[in-house]
Amino acid sequence: MSDAPTPNGSEPSPASPDVPGYVPAEQPRPLRTEPRSWLLHVLVDGLVGFCATALILAFFGIPLWVMILVGWTIGFVAAPFTRRLEAAQLAERRREAS
Image 1 (cartoon, rainbow, N blue to C red):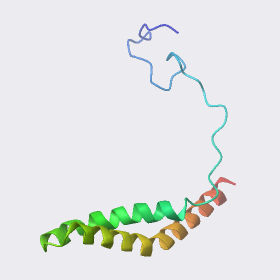
Image 2 (cartoon, rainbow, N blue to C red; image 1 turned 180 degrees about the vertical axis):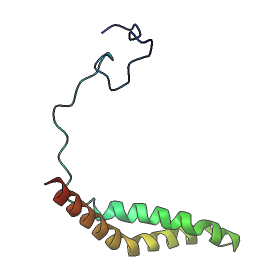
Image 3 (cartoon, one colour; image 1 turned 120 degrees about the vertical axis):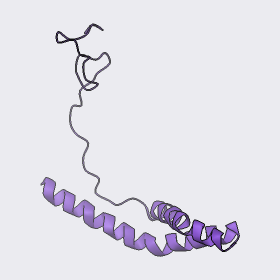
C-alpha cells in the first residue's frame, strides 16, 4: 500500500484495495421495502411543479406567492400518484432480487 504508481505506470482506481483508507463493504445494504414519506413526495413534486410553471406564470406577470401556491397545489395532487408508483417499483425490484 504505497503511494507509488502501479507497475504499468497508472494510478490505482479509487475502488482499488491499493488505495489508502479503502474498506471493502462486507454486505450490500438491504433493499428498501417502504416508499419514502408522503411529505417528501409533496415537497419534491411541489418543487417540480413550481419549476415547470414558474417561467410561464412569470411571463404573464403573476406574483411569486401565486407561483409557490400553484407549485404546492401540484405537489399535493401528484404526491399520492408518485408514492404509489414508487411502491410499485420497489415491489418489482424485490421480486427481481429474490
